[in-house]
Length: 412
Image 1: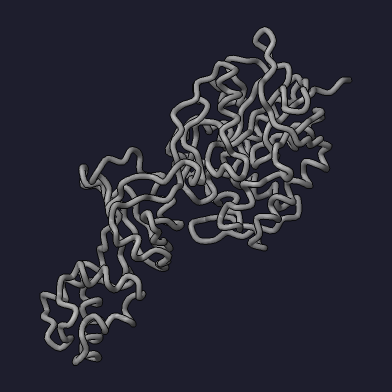
Image 2 (image 1 turned 90 degrees about the vertical axis):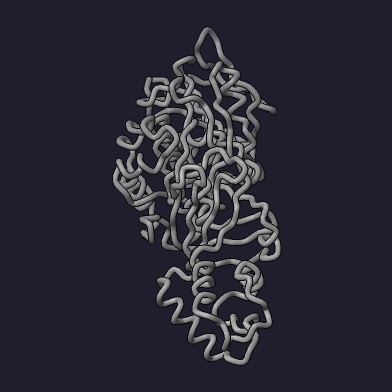
C-alpha cells in the first residue's frame, strides 16, 4: 500500500510534533525548515530552560488561553498536558514541576527538549530538508504541495507550522500568514503578546538594569478601577520601561493601551504589611538617627531605586532621620507598598515571545486542524489565532494542535 505523503512547513514545536506523529502513523513525511537547525525558538523559551507545559487539568488550560481557548477543546482532550509529560518522559527526558505548575526538564536545558524532539522525528523516519517555503500548490480546492526557494515538493497533505511574527531571529518572520492568505484564509490583526511594556516615566531609564526579585506587581486599569493582573516574582527596569517574567505575563492581560489607561503598581516590600513596614522604618531611622535620610536606605532598597523613592516622598534629602514624623513615615510606607509606573504601550512585536492573532479559527476544523477552505491543508501552533498566558500554555497549544494535525494529515 502506498503511504500518504505529508509535508510539514516549519520545524518548531508544532512542526516537530506534527511531523513525528504523521510519520509514526505510516505517512511519508518531509519536514521543511529554513533554519540550519530545528527548534530555534524552543531554545530560548523559559530563559533557555524551556517551560514545556503546565501540569494542570484541561479546563485550567483552557482558562489560561484568553484568545480562542474554546477552539482548543478537541486538541487538548486529544493530547493533554499529562499526555505531553508522558510523551517526553517515554522518550527519556526527565521532567519536574515548579511553582505555578510549570514543567521543565530536570536538566534545566532547553536543548534537551530540542534533542528529544529531533530524535523523535528522525526515529519516526521524517525527512528534514532545509529550504524556504514560498507558496502553496493548490489544485481545484485541494492541496498538492509546496513551492520552495530551491525545490518544489508534492504531497497529499500539508501542515503549516511556521510560528508567528515574534522573535524573527529564530525564523518566525510571518511566513505562515502569507501562505494562509494565499489559500484564501483570513489572518486576524497581529499584535505582540508576552512582551515588555513601555513607560513615559524618565525614572525607568535612570533605573535601567535594576532587577527586582520577590516583589509584588499589579496592573491597574485606571478607567474601570479594576486590577487586571497581580503576581509576585521578578521584574526589570529598562531604558524604555519595564520587563522581566511578571511584566511579560502582565502584558497578555492588557489589550489596547490608551494614554493614562494602565498603571503598574510595584510592592517593593510584599512580605511586610503597613504596620510592620512602619516598624522597620522606625528601626532604620533610629539606627541612623544623625544621618541624612538619603543615606539611610542602603539596607532597605537597591541603590538605583533610592533616589526615585526619595523624590516621590518629597522629604528633603538632607533631613535628619531623628526628626522624621509619623506622618512622613506613613507616606513613605505607601510609596514602598505602591511604587507606580505609568504604562504607555507595548514594545514591538519583534520583541514579543508570542504573536497574538493569526489564521482565523472559524475557518479551521477544531477536531482536525484542517482548513475548511482547502482540503488537505492543516495549520498548527502559533500561526493560528490562539495565544495564552505564560506558564507553559503556549507550548502546550503547539503540542496539542501539532499532534492533532499530524494524526489527521496521515489518514488515507
